Length: 493
Image (cartoon, rainbow, N blue to C red; front, side, top):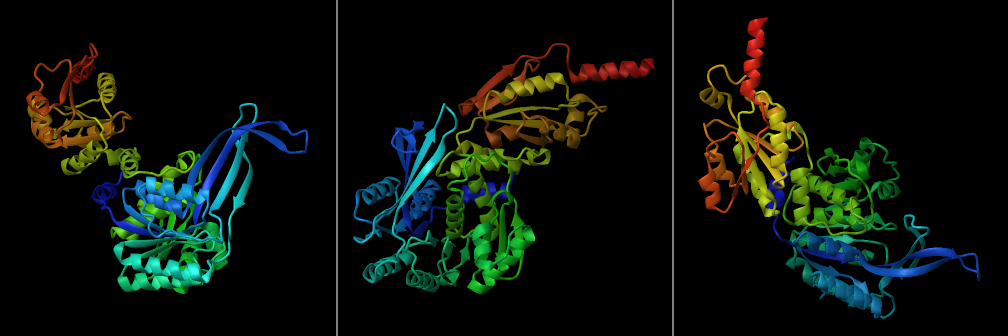
């Protein structure tokens, strides 16, 4: 768990970004592939449903909105119903479309996918039909587009170029935008087009090519981390960039900087359901973070999380800040990362509450962890979304239990508790009661075992609307009983 990234997500502002590029409307026709047509040797698809999704630069803009940042889209559509539908969807998502232009000579770019299933098996894409123009913008439209875009740049904190090689990102457009942004001190992030001349991106702040795109432009096969560093450095030098983000799918992101340094930021292993949209999500996250002034290293770390969440979804989904924060809070199950001091824990609890999570708190010495403890903690964890276990320090335990206790040190006790799947956080406290922790953390639920006659902190928790729960004890199981049995056996030996 990265406390630093959690803090960054909580403190992330709401910058305004300008997205320039090719707008795409993705249509999906879903149906049952019943049989082969009698008229020709083709599959007959009986349509059951259809769906429209935003693609290309439009999808990037939508994902930026999902990250709760403001965005203006600059692109070109045709004068057709597809263009109207695309623009309406963007407006509905809260995207500023005042810089969209209509080109009478070209259609709105549409990718229509026919997806069929047979005999209740998984659906598969049967056919994709593209309607598009790949020609560069006509000079008159290009002039108008450049004028409008340049008038917008200083209103934004970052410019993202989403180039899909459909004719909008012409050399003149790119040069004009990059030069104007540089004069204004605004970063420019480029997601390169599949058939682009990379020299047109010279002077941008950074680019985000994947393995294949990196190979095509550098001629270097990217099979290892070192390959990615060499290729990334070549991009930085030849294109006069500040840094290059070479995305390596399951291996993470290789960052190359203009000071000659490079670093790999690995990503956590995830269940991959659909890679569609992952690149756009990475671009959106890096863009929002760059606009807010985050370091390139932190941009890589957050982009890995955002891209990882995207591949866990079916289809293109706009990942939210809350989802990223939730993943950071629950993504790591390493024992040492569950053990926090009070200041760290207070920040984590605040983050969980912002997500609407219900925080459960319990405390004790937990000397000689036994089956009764485990059952109790597992039951306590079911009362909310997050279980905090506060355990008395060695000094505190001695004051409460006598000079011969604890049998096990606080470091070892906290590690054993943190190793339990049901425990989210463990914290050691030196006072005789957990009242100071309760005042600082203000959990939603305070839990104690059935052997406790008085619940310290009940009045405090109930005063702010929290709940106190008493759980039943496991009969004939206690640390004191176990220690007594051990001593009896030792004395009898």
